[in-house]
Amino acid sequence: MGSLDEGHLCVEIENGMKLDVSEKEPETIAIEDAVKVLLQGLGEDFNRDGLKKTPLRVAKALREGTRGYKQKVKDIVQGALFPEVGLHDGVGHAGGVGGLVIVRDLDLFSYCESCLLPFQLKCHVGYVPSGQRVVGLSKLSRVADVFAKRLQDPQRLADEICSALHHGIRPAGVAVILECLHIHFPNVESVLLDSKHQGWVKVLVSSGSGVFGNENADAWSDFLGLLKFRGVTVDRTLTRDSVNQSWCPSSSSSMSKISSELVAANPEMVAAVASILRSLGEDPLRKELVETPSHFVRWLMNFENTKLEMKLNGFACGISDLLKPNGEISSRNNEQMHSELNLSFWSQCEHHLLPFYGVVHIGYFCPKGINHLGKSLLRSIVHFYGFKLQVQERLTRQIAETVSSILGGDVMVVVEANHTCMISRGIEKFGSNTATIAVLGRFSTDPAARAMFLQSIPDDTTYQIL
Image 1 (cartoon, rainbow, N blue to C red):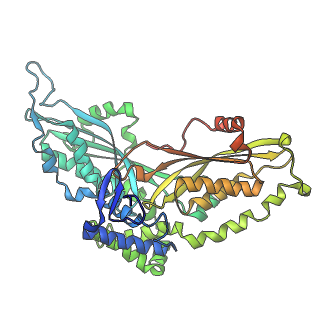
Image 2: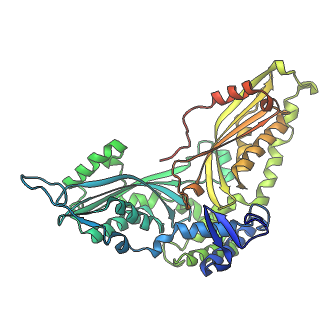
Image 3: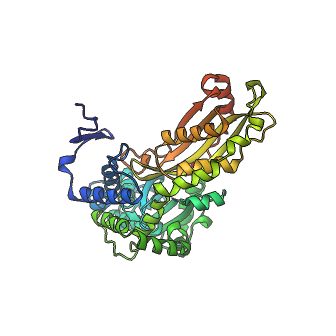
């Protein structure tokens, strides 16, 4: 039997690597067991196709995403300091004595310690050399990644990067600015009521040492002057207090009551998340992590299977009758193409239990003189299938089939999405996105109709981030 057969579980090939499951570490096994509890709490069968390997995939992703706990800055920087003289003549700063060095636009990700969701960050780091020596530029990125690969909040992450570099290379000063973006995942009830839900929380934080220790120092002016071409300005950098108050959506006071109720209703799931924290080398009783299990469970319960099955029955009933006056279906020549574009959605990858999000475009033919489907109805269909454990290909098909069943046939659906699992795991492909298409009825046989609909989709990717 081949190594990819479902029945051959000794070796799994993923991301180009072979994994011998007979040699899994105890921490990996513990996380797998915890994920099975979470899946059961969602009303899922972790032995069904699509979920059989989810516990292992989640364990691998979490351990890879928090590998920074086992890495040391000294091991990275040591041996990467190189002699470099300053100016030979004249007054000024350059080279290994006072010449500002900045590495910009480092794309990283980390895990929010408050809710365990990954967040993206763009890191700008610089230092002023001293002692006639400089550090290899790649080491700035690697040191930043060490601390990003831990459970974090933005300000502490910036402080830890800054402090580690200052002690590791002993420069005249270090400056760090982070642009952080945290997904604000709505629940299904709120997103149906609020079509303008803001899906992201973005903050900028800074940290400085040495000549950057004073926020009004001239060194900051030089640093920020070199960042202005990246759209970063000093007045957009938030204070430490404002970051603590506004960063993670799950920490808001309005969520406290919901979290408390979930702790009481799902003690096994909450305990499972605490077990995951311990397996990652963290202390669930650390004050910043005490509420994390309940925050994560509250978010995960958005995808509870049985809870959503009841909602589709309400909005689809009778719609097809409204579209067929006197029970007659108009001919093709008497039809018009309609479309609804950029319908936002949020979903959860069933392979890794990580979010994916984006927009849905729906095109369909409708008889002239008949009111086309309302945007709110199509948005409800999108959210119904989005708030499940999903894969994008299935999501696209299900939306198309449901709209087709209401209208009687001719439907085309395009889904464009960013997948968190593409950035927070081994592949780490920042900026990548995925498009899927489903065509039914006339769209499946009429290239001109497909082309007409595709041309109506705007060029700008409104869901693109950072």
